[in-house]
Amino acid sequence: MTPAQLRRAREALNHFAVETPSWGFADTGTRFGKFFQPAAAIDLGDKLADAGHVHALTGCCPTVAVHVRWDFKPGEDPKAVARLARKHGVKIGAINPNLFQDQCYKWGSFGNHDAAIRAHALQHCVDSIAIGKAVGSEYLSLWFADGTNYPGQDSIRARKHHFEEALRACHRKLGPKQTMLVEYKPFEPAFYATDIADWGMALLLAKKAGPRAKVLVDTGHHYSAQNIEQIVAWLLDEDMLGGFHFNDRRYADDDLTLGSIDPYQVFRIFHEIHFFAADRGRRPKIAYMIDQCHNEKPKIEATIQTVVMAQELYAKAALVDHDALRRAQARNNVVAAELILKHAFFTEVTPALAAWRKSNQLPADPIAEHRRSGYARAAAADRNRRRRELGLVSDGSFA
Ligand code: AFD
Ligand code: MN
Ligand code: MN
Image 1 (cartoon, helix red, strand yellow):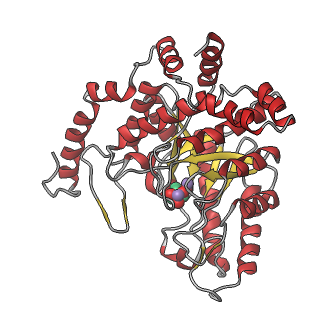
Image 2 (cartoon, rainbow, N blue to C red; image 1 turned 180 degrees about the vertical axis):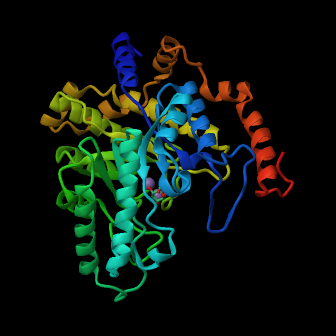
């Protein structure tokens, strides 16, 4: 790295933060089974402690996304949760309503043709907005499992109208400092027509909902042939890119560790963001969030791994020489333009990460430090004890 590159990479790292998901620290599974991890979080207190530990090691995860139904007990005081988060050195980030697990949502939530169920779903969003206001959260993050499984099952257009109306009603309840993120996903659990299946639908619905609604891009929610950075560039240019859910995919919404399959794609996404900022002279406000929950990898290690990968790729993308790129593009010098990106992508940014960590009094190797700290071992012992006291799963296989 040249001294100028070192400066650019460190400057990028100074303003890069990525939100961890509360659900990433707890046991979840697939439809084929759940494999319990002794150190997995039992309750929100554990999740916030784990998130605080990750932030203390990485220095760039000051906020934690929460899932209302999984994290807040009925009647729980959101301000007490905000205090608990602060005790662990983090803040509550995006609020995720749960619009897919109540039995009443079998035929959809906002897309349901039963107005009473749409009203129930809207009320949950209003309650979630109130939690957001109480904890000082900026984002209401909406993902819907809604859709149909068979041709003819329901009216695609009627469901679109239900969503337009419900999202507009939801938007009206937002506080002045809150933004509503509309997430899209091509399929799963709906396998014929998901109601918000692609970025175009999310964009249209967000625009119709109101001025504080934007699109959430989950990197796993695309077909393998899709050019995600092109979608990102369009949304940026429309000032409609609200944020990301980061994960990697090989086949579908696999929720793999970011960059584990295609790091160059993540680099190209970050390049579009840096290039936009350079062209506009301002950095766009984007909520960078992780959306993963690992069955095989130890949860805290997997989270640190994704965070470190995101930092590395964001720093690499900051090294693209935009002036040289614009000149090459103007001359249709294809090879030169491509090589400008490739040179940045293949530049080793470890020195910048090491210098940034040192100047922020952070461990040189966050995963090694996590392992050295014995945090997971202590958490496993404590949580196993509590599981036994609570009569939770205790198949004896826990270490
Ligand atoms: C699932 C969905 C979607 C959503 C997340 C959290 O596919 O990505 O954002 O759960 O609710 O991964
Ligand atoms: Mn997601
Ligand atoms: Mn997903």
